Figure 1 (tube, one colour):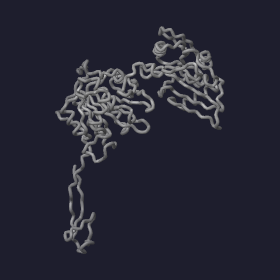
Figure 2: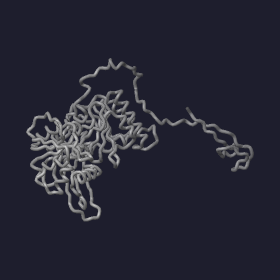
Figure 3: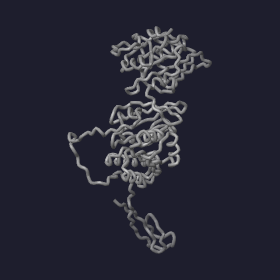
Length: 450
């Protein structure tokens, strides 16, 4: 509905005023102001509906048929694992990650693994020549890849309807904009509006859409939180610039299990899949050094063996340092307090450094027992016996609590040549050559240290 704007204008000299005046201050004439009414058109702030067909009808859920070809393999086993088996037709996926982590490279790797797919790559941050250089480095010819350097969402949707691609990649959503809004690209309004238009395109045209999103300095996806609610799948690409490995983590997935991870290794020819992450993180392990202990964490449904390294040394400062890399620092302080109170190991005047080898960040409580063992091993200079694995959650009373997926963890340990395992009491049905010893209190793990 149009809004009315009222103003007053002098009929003698044309001077304008927001209110009626008896005498014009410009020409000094009396009673010359008359009311003028202008129709002000209301600006169009939202244009979410991008449908080009007629109205659709509601259908019964019992009449909906699930086709076997709704899910398509990407050709990358690690990516398929995180997606729950592949990309679903008409799905809406959001991929976030730090700058330079390899998001665009992953998309080109997907195009290389599926040369029979028609992929429309919307480049909002790079020129076609830059994309061509990266594609040549990973050995992608790009006959199936259409590059469209544009950031106008209306033209992007027009190109998608014209080519009907198997996969639409928008790199990135923060650079896209709609001319119906006056705000700058990357603003909350622009991101929300463009995402809503792409969502309708994905669902109504059955075009699988993958958006690449920027992240903040805290690692969260930039833009409104509603963006993550809007999409079907949220993927986080994680990694340290100083490390070669990259971890693709599924934070949300409407078509499969969430919290699954895929591991890649960055090399000169692009991203290579790591089908056995335990071998990657366990390479270079030396169990003869005190403070080094092995544990097994669960990332989704995948068990991964990692090495926990601890170094306890006399402090040169009045306040001892507590430093953790890849492990929650507050959790480390808690475990030190438990070991002091319940285990009788004193850390007064000692600096404590804890590191998860390989640059991996872990949050699985099953690693608590390995941290306790590594701390005691370092302060007493007692290396772990042989290849021993420590698994268990530690409570405030010093008790060792049961952990889920114990069978899968033991099976993975057996594959990696682990000889001994110290874990909480519980029934293990997995047949393995690993010699297992149950422990219910933290002082009982000392049998695993020399």
